[in-house]
Image: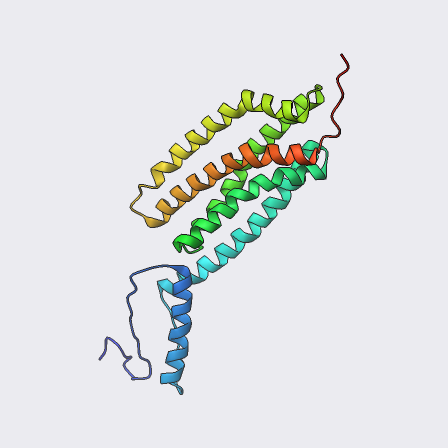
Amino acid sequence: MYDWVSDDYRNAYIHVEMNGYEANKITKTLDLVKSYSEEVFPDAKTSVVGEVVNYAIMNGKLVKGELKSFLGSFILILALMTIAFGSLHTGLIAMIPNIAPVIMIGGVMGYLGISLDMITMTTMPMILGIAVDDTIHFTNHIKFYFEKGLSYKDAVLTSYREIGKTMGMTTIILCSMFLVLSFSVMNCLARLGYLSIIGLVSALIADYTLTPVLIFLTKPFGKEKKIVS
């Protein structure tokens, strides 16, 4: 009995092994254990301790912190894009394609039942930071050719021809790097790998489709100049 109770028989210790570390399930399990122990031992003081408890608390704080960080980075990037293009209208338009990969990653996680933890949460702000580079590059080229006198349609097509392949190759190289992680024996790193690939591919598709369509429809750089022959 000395393995489970103290010498004075005032304290009892129950050790339980868990075969998984999914944060959401751990939190629910801990709440059930606390309520059950209070029900079974109403006159005793019960507490749940151990590595799992520390992991659940740490994971909760990190996820909340990363969510705040993601929101802060989104606002900061929007402000910088507004300054770069000299227009809040253009900055908001340019941010829409960058939200698409984040929504895609969240949808895939929900469909596959992947929990939001300290590793998977890292993917979203990371992809946002990478995706915004191509958006700025593409939008800036369209603006450049439009200011040179081309129509929105011609500016978009010219930008496609000049940097479309470059954007695609950059995405392929980045996806190849994250592909290495997807073969990891650690599930958290494998999830980080293929979620990053999904985010990068969806970001490229959004830049190829949403960005030119939004610019063509909203015409954020002003009216087209009539070329007099």
